[in-house]
Figure 1 (cartoon, rainbow, N blue to C red):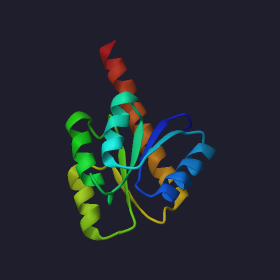
Figure 2 (cartoon, rainbow, N blue to C red):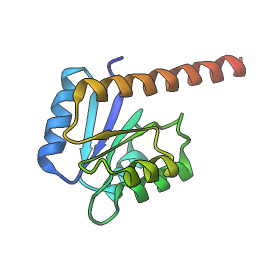
Figure 3 (cartoon, rainbow, N blue to C red):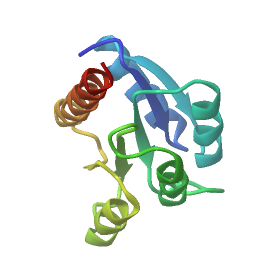
Length: 136
C-alpha cells in the first residue's frame, strides 16, 4: 500500500534520515520532524495517514504527543506506532494506555515495521470505506 502519507517524529537526525529513506523506497510520502511539538504542528498543517513516533524526545516526549493526538483523532483516524530504543515493558504498557496502535523497538526491524504499518493502513482504509458506504 504505497502513497500513504507518513509522519516520522524522532529527535535523532540519523534515525529520521534512515527511516525516511526506507519508507521512500516503499513509495510512502514521508515528512520527518525532530520533536513532539513539531509533529503536532505538522499534522495541523498537512494531515497524514500514520505516525511513527519516538517515545523519548526532549521538550515534548512521544507519550505526551500521543495523548494530544488522541484528543483529536481516534486510533482508526490516525494510527500511531510508537518506537523506542528501550523495549521495557513500562514503555510498551504506557504507549498502549495512551492510545498507541502498535509498538516497535529500535534498532528498527523494517520488514516488521512495514507489516505493522500496512495492517493499520488497511484497517484505516476499510473503516473509511465503511463510513462512506453508511453515508450513502
